[in-house]
Length: 137
Image (cartoon, rainbow, N blue to C red):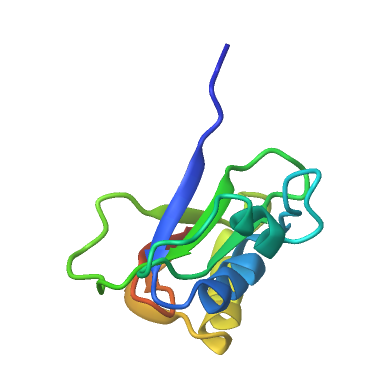
């Protein structure tokens, strides 16, 4: 049996970063686990939180194919290049470069930043907290 994976982001502002990736990937907010009505109730079920615990946000692929994304607030800042990054794929049908550029502009409008462009192939970007990712066909 294959195992499923989650991708977890340590971050400064979980809700804001989740909002960026919600748009980037077309994901939706994940409901809290049953029987809890809210994430706050679920978190409270673990008892008193540690003093440095921050908030969190959870996203899921509405089709159930992609990994769940988890955003956890941590006190320390990002200090180095990612050792793992996400490739946002726009599909190979037709001419992909215009679709890549359109996605890049959509992501720039919500806080993404272009780091490098490999014309005709892919664009390296950073999300609002500096996590690198690529937009490609």
